[in-house]
Amino acid sequence: MVSISSCAQSHPSSIAARYLQRKCIMVDPNWNKGHYYDGKYPKMGMKLARELATMGYRSGPEWDLRFARKRIDEGKSPTLCPTFIIESYIEYQGEQFSTKFDPNSLLYISKAMDIFDIAEGYNSLEEALERVVCPSMVIGVKTDILFPIIQQRELATSLTKSGNSHVTFYEIDSLYGHDTFLLDLNNIGAAVKGFLETKMSNGH
Image (cartoon, rainbow, N blue to C red; front, side, top):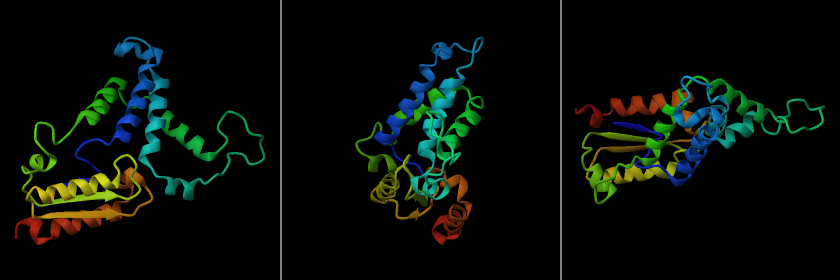
């Protein structure tokens, strides 16, 4: 088993972020309590939800390096419209995603992520993880604010405490936050390759 930027249950800050994303969609008049398929599409709600989500996908260090406080037009007087490049980037991400995914699907998947808890129905997380007997690798990213690194450590530690003697914890120092698993393929790939090639993971 390889777990990348995951967790045993959602962190309160992640729940709060997804709550606001869902609210963006549900306050859009065009959402119409989910009955929008034969009417107007809740594009603005989806756009705002994605803009908020983007804040959790990437990291502050990356944005400082990539955007800093650079302005769209250095010589232009400030207005309430986007002034900084980071603002236009967030807006672009929202616009691009706004019509690519079904809003109701996003609402239910988002809520399912909040409710999910490996330990539900068990006396402890360790008891729940006793079912995982295969060699396991847990990968976390230091700059991940959506699934904080402390949750990856907790998962790896709990797997070990549950009796699994073949647990590997790998911490990646990457600029890309939660999106590291999509963008930093060298680090992720090397970690997974190394794990799969070890004796304990292939059973030899």
